[in-house]
Length: 183
Image (cartoon, rainbow, N blue to C red; front, side, top):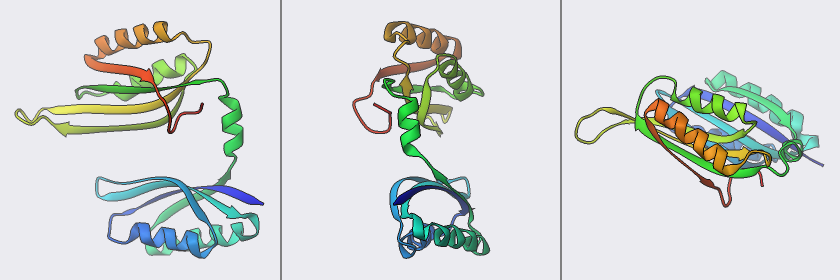
């Protein structure tokens, strides 16, 4: 029987980190099913979903602990992907894109709105870059969310647009055809 293991990692950024962690997974008989990894500031961070035979699970957990000696901070735990799929059955996947001048609280305001609506944030990425001519900080966020079937699309869109006006940002919400959102 195969187990699903969620691994999070943080390390000072350096060449070879992805090779090192994936070698440990491979050497233990694991398979990398999904991952998100990036350099953030001067560190490298990642989340990985690994499938592994339950007989090799303890070996993988021990190997992850030993990476701590190399400066990689890892946390690992088994997870049940099927349980999440069941909890959000019937939810409708949407993509939300928010852009505008950067200021504090944009992500929190959008997340609070979505939580109030009972939506599940399945993926979220946000960044700040400099405008080409002025150098002003520009905010960009992309989120994949699963919206409860009881929430009307038109009402949700209108409420999100009102919130965007309050935040002085632009927002686009559309049905998401595939990828990270729960069907």
